[in-house]
Image (tube, rainbow, N blue to C red):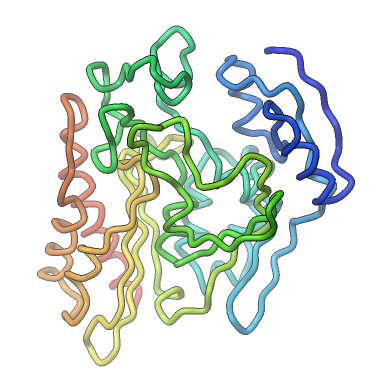
Length: 327
């Protein structure tokens, strides 16, 4: 681990001013990802600004939905009674991730910014465009079983590892930020970037921009949502494929649908074609199979991850069936 300095922010403007002024500075919250990557020399910030004193950890219910502070711990969010009742996919996604000890420390803001688990990214001896732009992508011709089949490029096929973010995309969440140029509200669907030719840039955040909260709107389908994660083992494993699904069924017809995929794409993957395959149809096998096929249209698998195309399709179908069985 490289030497670094540490300070605690007095307030949000102080934190933003310090980090914005130092190109090699970074925010520290729960640290469950950052400290790991610092120990591996994958990330080497020269100054850490601790934002925990900012107390951005409140979970507030209002008539328009719910507001979750960026420093709210994953366990607190997952176990909140309103989230369990009105946004079950989010609670399920959080509870399927990591271990209880990590969930007790990890924050919502940190989860949004979680880095990929690609082994080549975490191995400083391997070429990786995300870690060192222009060095090459070892995964394209390497062992790519855990890598993305959607949203990749010749520069990077690293899969986004977050469970929480998949649920947030399906639930039309909005990320609230504050930075050197003021405040922004960023739709979750637009928050993460595809790798393209610049895989080192993963989100739309500017340097020094601080995530302050995530809001979830009160929508008719949110309470009828579900998150399903398929993995190699039942505990503490990253998704091979996952799906967050939500349906609004009225008089036997699907009026609105949301489908997002995880474990198979370079960012939390919204599947509008799959949603369109459901709207106007009665919930059932035919509609669910059509949605599953549409969800993986355009997939570009490589040598070792071809199985993910069928796995992701079946995950969507199963998630929809499980959701319908709850009705």
